Length: 325
Image (tube, rainbow, N blue to C red; front, side):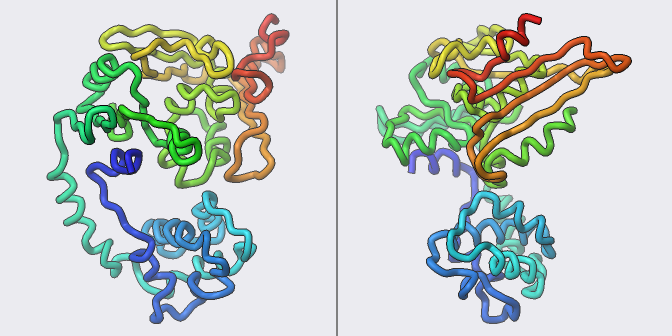
């Protein structure tokens, strides 16, 4: 609960049992997810119902494409998805989301959550097993300087696996998901990263700082000449993103430092960019090879080009021979 507890601060949680109304109600005349063949073994049903409920609240009459996008983070081995998609597309027969109890209570719930907002640092848990929510970015920098061995938790899309699969202790944990402070070629590429739900939780900073050689974002950002700002307390330093990755599992980040900013220049005239991802499945899969390409073309001649790959070495990097040219 440490991970979920910190991320759920000032949030409202809705359980699958409460979300099944549009998909299981006897008043719903269309096909229902809760009955065969929409639900067979039942293992994936709660996640599917939650995903479809969120879609229905935003899009009362979804198309098949919108349903498939919403289901990207759910794997079903029994149904082949067809009956699930039919039930989701037919959900508009149930009625408007405006009639849903949660929708009607939304303003009241939002007001109650607003009243819980705090401008102070929040610390929960006993000494040695604490969850910390900094008040703002400056407080985060101070907090990390005080707790240099802390685990930074943003979306927990990676850290969550450390806890659930490796039983790795992460205390103290500093949560940053609440802190808030034109590249069209990336739109399709972003949609290849994980599923809809994970994209809403994960962060680019976390994808970089974790240092995975098959991370989706570093190659495309390296190709675009990205620069990152590392911060320790009030001290900052800027380095090219490609220099951040030293070796497998090693980054140019000292204890107490965090990735504060990622900077990418806007496209120049004649700049052509592309991003590719090779994976076993098209959706909801880890990259086998992510690639970013950026070049400048004038009069049909490439005057400059930068290519970066992931999954080809212990770190995301540019091909050595291409880099020399």
